[in-house]
Length: 313
Image (tube, rainbow, N blue to C red; front, side):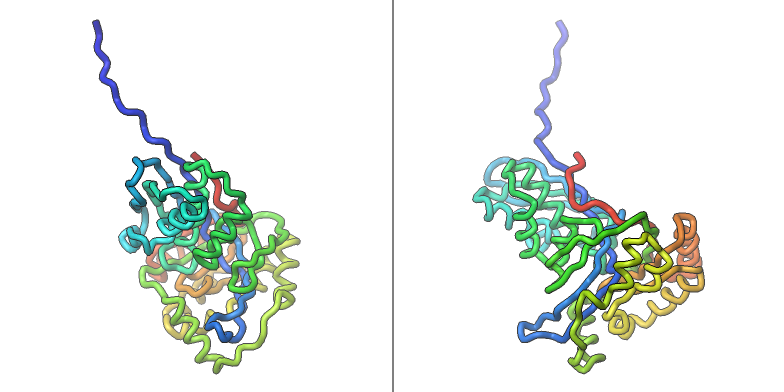
C-alpha cells in the first residue's frame, strides 16, 4: 500500500499590480496657510508596475511586510511603509483585524518621483479588500487612498488624469494611442519637502495661481495622440528647483534632447528624468545613450498610458 504525505494547503493570497506615473505637467501655486501648495498636474500611468501579494495569516498575527526587487534595501519594512499603512487604514474602515502578510515586488524606481510607494499603497488596498472579501467600492477605496497620500488615488485609477487640489482630486483625461517613455533613475533621492522649499526660494513665495487652462496644448496633444506636440507641451514648475539641488541632472536632460527626444523633463519632484521618444526603438536608443554616458544609475523604458491597480492573480 502506497503512502502519501499530507501537506498543508497554501494560504489564500491575492496579487495586485499598480503602475508608476510620470507627470506630463506639474504646475505649483503659492503656498497656502495650511502649508500646502495648490497643484494642477497631468498624470500618466506607465508600464512600470509594483506588485503586492496579500496572503492570509492566522488571527492575531497583524501585518508583516517583505520586499524584493531593485533598490529593495531602501524600502522600510514597518508601519511607515505605505502598503502597511494601507492595510491598517482599510482594516479600520471595515472593522476587521489587520491580519495579513504583504509582499512587495518592486518595479518602479525608489524615491524617484514616480509614485512607487503610492502604487504599493493602491495595490495593497485592492489586494486586502479582495483577500478579506470586504467588497469596498472603488470610489470608497479612492477616499481611503487620498488619506494615504496625494498620488495614491491616481495609482488606483491609472490611465491619464488631471489632478487638482493637492493632486488627489482626479478627472480622467481623453487620450489616444500609446506613448513611449525612457526614465533615468538615480540611487540618490531628492527630498520632496526640500524641492518645494527650493521652489519657494526661487519664486520668493510669490508663485502665480494655477489652473487647468494652462495645459490646453498638452490636453489637445493627448486627445490627438500626437507625441511630437505632447513633447513640446511637457512642463514642470519644480524642475528648476530640483536642478538647483541636483545640477548633474541638466546633463541627463541635455543628452536626451541630443538623442532626439521629443521632450524631456524632471518627473515630479525628481530626481528621475523622463524622456518622450518617437517609438520603442527610439526609446531604446535614448536609453543606450544615457547608459553609455553614465548619466543614470539605472535606465528604464515603458509605455503609457497603463491600467490602474487591479488583481492579476
